Length: 115
Image (cartoon, rainbow, N blue to C red; front, side, top):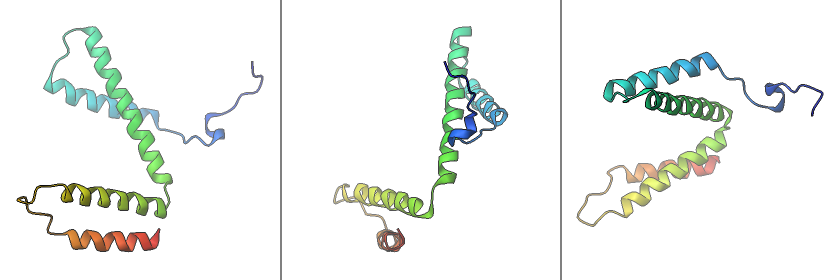
């Protein structure tokens, strides 16, 4: 057993606004509740559990996004554009391609120069 107490924020973990996360989970739950009503109490608990997990994942993703540098964001954008161009190339020859392909290539070139 450890004798000393280590604060959660001491290890580099960001602090989260738990009230905002819980409010987000309730918003998700209410949105889901309007579409389909869970049959019993166990289904409602499971449904809220999924909403709470989703709210925590969103909060953690937002925290990770704020810590990214501009180079990491540029690299992510290049990856997104490359994937979009690959999807465009895999279409059949009868399907028209994207009209902004040149703009996408130009954006990749500028971002690759920055990263």
